[in-house]
Image 1 (tube, rainbow, N blue to C red):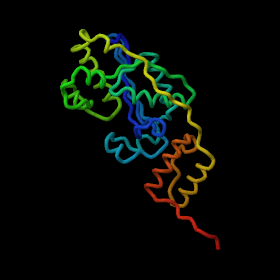
Image 2 (spheres, rainbow, N blue to C red):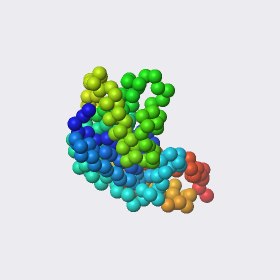
Image 3 (cartoon, rainbow, N blue to C red):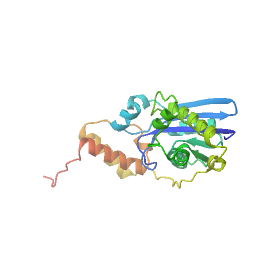
Image 4 (spheres, rainbow, N blue to C red):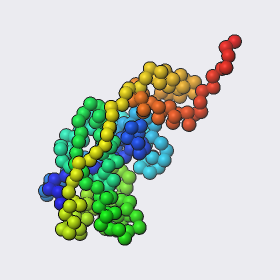
Length: 241
């Protein structure tokens, strides 16, 4: 078992780190016998899809006054230091953290260990490898599933259960390895995108989403697509009288 590590879990608006955003960070830091926790909601500066709210219970009202991703990420990095991170499908969480860090001009590179990888390799007889299935298999409490801190706490117990059962015979599988995600700093929203969104919201009589001016180009494109899907495209006159 790692001497010191941080179990991390994120809740996001989607699964694509270049266009979706973090809306909650939960973590458990273990250093020997000392255990600390971290949790914060994050304002994603965009609408939260209804399906995501149904799964997580996180609403737009809940994140409206939450810290920005810059504030939340800085606090998380202060909490986690340079410790390796553990997660269930840790590459997903790492990719969002890495992309956010790069967008903000911050360095972020960590070693990691994936409980999903360990479970698939060491428990090949199981039907599923979701966190909910594995916690039931090991009789681990998962109250508050799909909230970041609850999932991080459950993942920590899952990791320690796997260590207890398998590490002695499979020590190499339990070594943290460098996590890799190639993140490129995203360009800011363009003047044309911002103008279009202003025209669109005025046309439909809706409020401009908060934080649009601080979005990246990719985020603005995703927001535009979401708004068009929800409200319909603007119908422009084909000729002027």
